[in-house]
Length: 184
Image: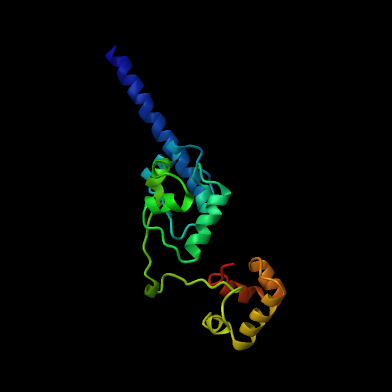
């Protein structure tokens, strides 16, 4: 009987190690791997996987079970517009969920703080609302381009970065310089 108990315990340990190794390989080989269960979230946390809540992309949020595309987009829009999330309670409020519903994904969430004056945090600009003066503070934007941005948005708001590039006929290199500073 003792041998049977030992064998069951051994089999569970080996099974867990295999599961961890498999998940580790998926995380390494598939950049946008979506966790299939809350158990995988817990294993990922043990392996050191983490999502910086205040820097997460839509793809990062979609890795987590129970997060919809609409919730992911909303969270990214909030954080990019300057709304910091400091705790699980903040995240729950932003999603309109209870804290209890989010506790299972909490082990992989990091609530990092970025001081605006640190230089680490970018202050994104909405080209649909920014003044010429504000646009001039962006790298690679001169007076001519800032005025063109304002003039073109009078016809219709820019929908996204691709629309912005096409309407202003900007080079790929310039868009690569600007894309981290623009939020639509």
